[in-house]
Length: 246
Image 1 (cartoon, rainbow, N blue to C red):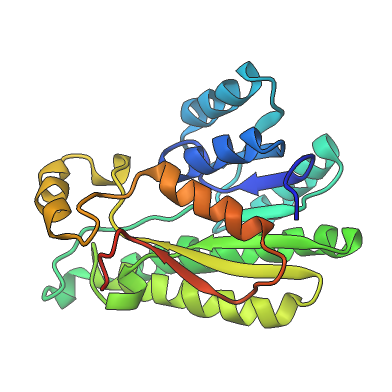
Image 2: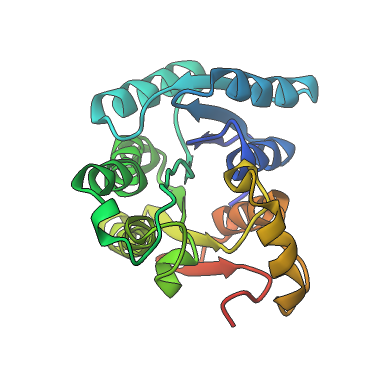
């Protein structure tokens, strides 16, 4: 699938991996809907970066954990650009909790992480799917995490939620075939705002990776776009981690 003139919705598109994906999609000729929950200024800056290069983009607010807001966002995107062809489910949250501190992983934290990281992706896919089916083809990429593969990460609920994202990808691939392809790109450590105040951990990790480097947001964005373009693949979990999980 060529991305030129396609309409892409990227959740959490204002910063980090989401912004890099938006910019790469725009560079390949797609019109981009930059979703944000609270970071309006960041999302608008992403839009400005795209339009300054002659691309098409708008910013739309929605909390992806709320189905009514997701449906409203997709409808607004369709009013602006006519349809939605591509969806990148990037929005996600975490809490930094020591794994051995089971009491700190409260019911509220479990509910918050699952609402955004898992249900949010499902809500977005469900809202966009009818428009993709109408056009006869569509593609969805969910952003997972190596935490969902290793069972480790910023917190136990986060790791489990990302494992659920990997499972959701496979289930949606079955549910939405053949018109819509669903895959998952799984980053390892990526130097973004997510790791603010933890840069020293990144510096310590890099020399121990097989490729001796931490992935950049642009590395993940390039893979996301390649997966969106690949018409012979669905239900796949693709890891981009500089060999971190070897």
